[in-house]
Length: 307
Image: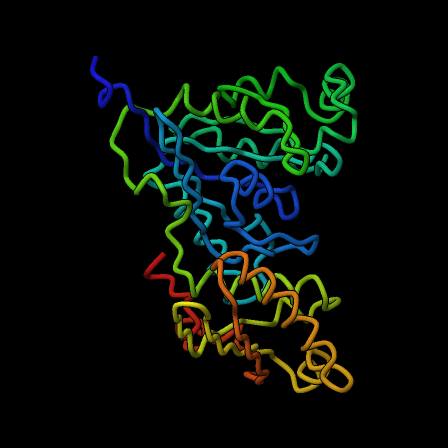
């Protein structure tokens, strides 16, 4: 077999409940901030691709929104994107947080994917809390759901810590065992198929999630109105669209301090990503109930027909 025929490539969908660490895991595998993270549920709104490359493989990971109850049309889009991510993929990576397993529903949810034809790997996250004592981890899992049952559904089980990057190499090598031989779908230097504008918008939204409380960040969409890249500087004009006039005041803050904090933190991230100076201007506008209006969702890039 020549080198070309020895090369492996495949598509992996990462699924699981909100806040189990899917985005952190993806970023740890890729070594870049592909998907934004926060402690708030539903941080990821659509399927995002992260591309892992090494000398003998290319793995395209799809980070999906967390499995959640549908409350509005944006949630419907997110739910559909999860289901569509399971089409035409080679492997399902199901991630659970060992510290917050839904005892009543975990077995039911796992059974929902048991009939799918793809290879399935279970990754049990946040094992650092147990100081990597795998005997204690096994006992904890068995108290909630029998490992023998898990072995009937999953081809492999791997314990990881996304945050501490523990056993990430073991997880990647386990995935490589099961993905097929195939071509390189993306350039070896690519780590995502997202545009720079989309990544910048997500970095700004991440800072909104960090700095704003309660439900406000979930009602925000970031729109990049202008993205003017020059040799030594990039001029970016962004708009935060929220759902209520009262939210606009909170986002701006007293004397504009909150908006300034969001802008400063965002600019630092964007400059690191673009590797150049950034002139970032952020404005705030109101579009009432945009999450529940199909036309607005399509205008903001959440088109069900294009998932």
